[in-house]
Length: 151
Image (cartoon, rainbow, N blue to C red; front, side, top):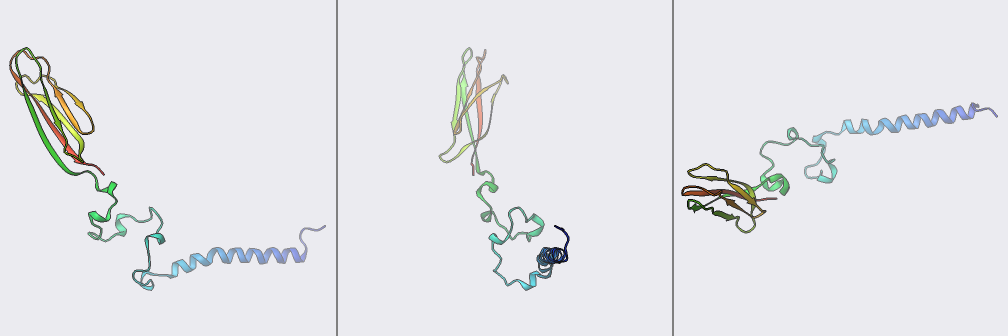
C-alpha cells in the first residue's frame, strides 16, 4: 500500500490549509477590533484575564480605596495606647495594655524611664504586658502599643 497517493496528498493539503486558516483567523480578527468599536459598558470583568491589567492600563485616580479588595487596603485606623507603672527600688512591676474591640496588635515597645534597663514584652493578638526587671532604685516601666484593624 502506498502512503502518498494522489488522494492522500490532496487530503493532507486540504487539512493543512484548514489548520493554517483557523490558526490565523482569530489573530487577524483580534487585531482588527479597537476600543472605538466596543460599545461602552459591554466589557465586564469576566472578559478580562486575571493578572492582565497593570497600573499603566488604569487611568490615574479612577480606582478608589473602596474599589480595592479588603486585603489590598492594608491595616486601618491605627491607635497608639500608652501604659506605665511605677517600680519601687528592689522590686518589679508590669504595665499591661489591650487593644480596643476589633483591633489587633501591630507593634509594641517597652522601656524603663531612668535606668534604661531591658523590658520584657509578653504579646498576644489583642494586648501586651511590659515586665520590668528588678531595679535598685525607683523607676517606671513604660509601654507603647500600636493597634490596628487588619483586613
